[in-house]
Structure formats: structure tokens, C-alpha cells
Image 1 (spheres, one colour):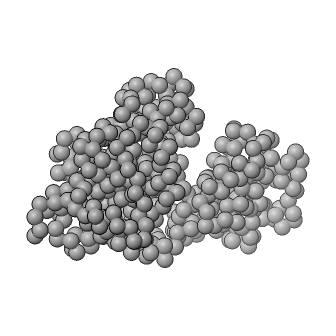
Image 2: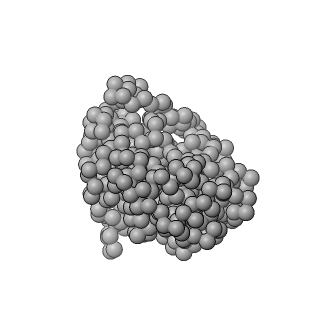
Length: 437
């Protein structure tokens, strides 16, 4: 594709994202490219990378357009991205809108006027409201400021950068060093992750799923932070473990490897579709100790399994604010009502899952959020209502065999892109008393 044709495809893709505000942008992009198979791999990558950059800059781009009295149409958003975010001159940007060779149609008089006005501006403007400059909804800014304090700008900048591709080595089949050599032989250079003993870090958007190492189940794509959340559960061979919000099984796979395929794991979720998606991943990884369970209305297995698990993981549904560097569109859609609904669901799920923990067993509550309301506040509230549980601090977890690699200096595992280079994750380990208090 010519540069101009890529621009037109980018405009069309942006329009598709805007037309489906309730659908994650990565799913919109997948459908867009599947319906346009004539677009080659290199062009797809370039168009997608521009989309993610535009999504990260979207609040600022829209603010500039509003400041000059121009509507935030897909074409003008693209012009704003080219000039303000990519530093292209107004003449060069206008030259791409010639209508030739599948490129965008020539600019209208109104668009030319907007382009001239944009040429005199800079992406970061002192007059810009702080929430716009930081790229978050205005209602969310006070919550993030309370969470990060003087590190607010630094942490949000880290959440605004593209994420690397983290891999978890499947130790049921291969060692980390051998997996690294295997990937290198396929042209993908990796480095060991700084914390997880099973992690490798590859360049952003490395073609991992096309490798034989991935097809043979030697590796899984999983952020290092997610690997550490699985680690905090301290699941051991022979234990009985429940992954209560298993989804498509990412952490289930990590737990199975920790347990060396011995013992029993119940992968539970409210979505039959997500549980079904886990089947192929489990088979590819050579996992044999996992049973899937659907959490359906009126389901009786939870009541029958009361107090029977050594470990229970609650990877609760959340705002996903810790994953914004991978899903920059998610913060644009997040509303206060969403957070309120999630807080209620988290409380209900945690209460229900806690009944599965046996005396002396451990319950881990985790989210991929950086908000205190979804994390520390939920744990404190749960402990107040459930005196049979107490917090197992991070220092105590490190003292357990093999968990000295867990980072942090507080009672919880609290990971952020700025401090740890991972997605934002939170996890708290709660141990149930051997006897009722």
C-alpha cells in the first residue's frame, strides 16, 4: 500500500472504532482486517500501530480540534494525529489527501482551514485541562491522584506507552533457557523478565503466535504481572485449587505448571464461551489436572465444594485500568457507573468464593486495576466482614519456599508499569484460620 492508502485505511478503521463504542478496539480492528485480506501483514501492522497511537492521543487531539472550532471527524482526527502527534508538516499532510491510488479524497475548504490552524499548535498545550493532558476521564482523575500522589504523571505516562510482549515459559515442557534458545532460532530475541522466574520479554508486537514454540505449547503470552499474581497463590503439587474467575485459562495454565500437573484445579467462570476457549490452550500446554466448571444461576457445585480447597484465586472483573497500555481505548469508555457496578460485583464474588477455602487454606483476591477502591478497600471491607480470614503479608509470602522474587514493600502485591514494567496488577493473600474465631 502507498502511504496515502494506509492513511485512508486508518481513517476507515477509526470510523469503525467510533461506530462501535461498546466493542474493544482490538476486536474492531481484527474484524476490519479480516474483511480486507488484501491488506498485507506489514501494512496491517503500520495501520494498527497508528490506530493505537491515535487512541492514546485521542483526548488531546479532540481538545485541539474543539479549540479551533472544528469537528472531530475521522479525517480531521487523522490530520490532527499526523501534524500534532507525528510532527508532519501541514503541506506534507495535505499532500496525502490527493485522492490518488486509493488515498483520501482532497481536503475541503473547511478541512484546509482546520489544518492551517492545527499547524500552529503543539500536542501538549499549557491551556489543556489536566485530565485531557493525562488522557483520562475527568471523574477518574481524583481517584488516580489519590492512588499515585506525586507519581501521577509518571505512572500515567507509563500506562500510555506501548507494552512489550511478555511470555510465560511452560515448565511442564521446557526450561526458560531452552525456550529462549528455541525462540532465538526462530528469529525472536528475548530477555528474562526481571521478577518472574518463568517469564521472557519479547519486543512489542513480536509474531509470537506464528512460532513453533507457541504452537507446541512451550510458551504462552502472559504479562509478567499476571504471572506474579499466579505465583502469589503458592499452589503446590497435590493441592486442590480453584481458579474462580478463570476466563480463558491464562492463570489456570500457570497454576498447572506450578503444580507440575499433580493435584486438581477447578477452572470456573460464568462464561461458557471463555471456558470453551481454554480447552485448546490446556491441550496445547499438556495440562491434564484441570476440570472446567460453569458458574450458572442455581449451580450447586459451589455449595457442595464448601471448605474443600487449599487455594482459591479470585481474579475479579475490574476496570482493567492497569492494562491501558495494551487497551488504550478502554479508558475512553470507562464511566463512573461502570466502577460502581464493578465494586458491587467484586464484593459479591469475593464473598462467594471465600466459602470454598478450607481451614488453613489461602484465598487470593486479584485485579488488573490500579484503583484503591477496587483493591485495598475491597480487601479491608472483606476482612471486616469475615473475621475467620487474616491478611498474609507480602513479607510472609516471600519467606515461603520459592517466592522470594515477589517485588514490593507493602502488605500487598501492587504492580504498576512505572515502577515494575508490568501491567498494573494487585493481589492480596488471605489465610483462613484453622478454627473459627
